[in-house]
Image (cartoon, rainbow, N blue to C red; front, top):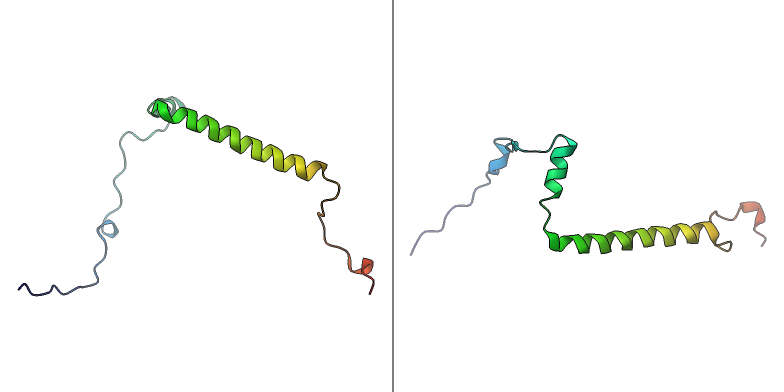
Length: 83
């Protein structure tokens, strides 16, 4: 039988040194555009559908808030309460 190992509290490895910087991190717009080209083509339709869905949700919420006259936007004032 092997003896059980004593468990000690030790700091994790990243605490000793900062994360290494990437040498090819994007700084300019042209470099960022080159990184966009690395997106797999099968994710583009998913991004398009997601963008349309988020846009439709924002439009729907804004339309409801701006056009619904029965929507309560403020609390009733205390003087309007009658007991």
